[in-house]
Image 1 (tube, rainbow, N blue to C red):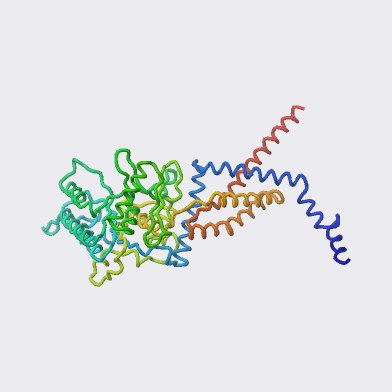
Image 2 (image 1 turned 90 degrees about the horizontal axis):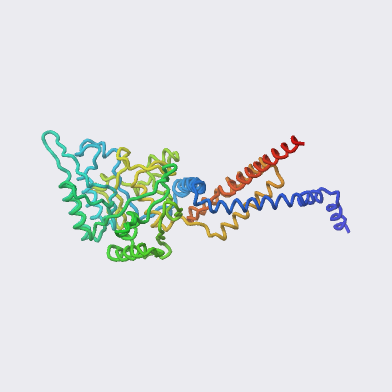
Length: 475
């Protein structure tokens, strides 16, 4: 009897709970709630198509920028996760100190060829599987004379490069260089350089170092899989070639590359290439179009130079085990095990060279873009789009939550609660999913939907107000 009496009192028509329930589910409230959901769904559908527009791309880019910054902080600086960076990558970086050291011929605007050639040979000799040369060296270094002694580094470098090719054949190493365009009017050194590369094409492979810069804000967010030409074979990017030849060696690597080229020319779906050691790791290829989004070609940055880590993140872990100066490599006491069975990327990090790119994590040299692309491919950590069923379920959930808030609370309070939910729930979850599985979640979407809905509703209310005001005036 006591329980019955309690229930009757609690749900009595005059009770607070009863009044609240009636208030929440009045017909006019229900109508407003359903209207909000319909607005949200309509805008969400439009935004799905907006991904092909400048506005949609800007929204995706902003979310991507936040995710890659938080991903680097969480996975590299805070957690120092061994699984965030592949142990198969080593970088030999020619930095500002090397270029501004007066003891090298050619001056600070020319890469010291003898140092580069010796570094290349030593890296191959220590057992690297692949060497990536991020230098375009077809232009000759001016003749340098000091104290009556003149040094011509150009043909000295050609001798060293030929020696490197000979050692690479012996050690079964592949050397990958940026593709250079043939030039019939080239001078003696340039012709000799081109001929040397062609003569040793069994170990020297040319790829493209292309990355995509956004036309609106000049920020690099996408890498490249391959370049196509109607009359020529597709040219794969330097990082793709490096990973394939590292996994399979020259002979079998050639087979995979040739198969992919055939599929590209026939405009077929390109078969993924699986790692021989771990079948779960694979490179997924896609045909790229500047007018369309290619999520799988978006960067995740895990390898950054010291100055960027200091300037953008306030300091943190420096990758001394991965990034090595050439003078250290050439030291007699350097342990070859640091290089053995690794991909070695040799490049320059020198602002005066101009190969500096603006990215979401700051300005970095092209050699770091190559290393980060290789890391994404080696770790099978390409960015993926969420399955559309899960994506639409999450989106519907956000619309229902936002619609309920806008139905029962004022607009300012609803917006504040939504922002809190996005910042403290949606964003951290998005970062975790992005870091661990490479799945992209656009956490700005619910705020964008409700912001557009609010603008549309405000505009309609204003137009209605103007209409009825004019009608009253006429009366």
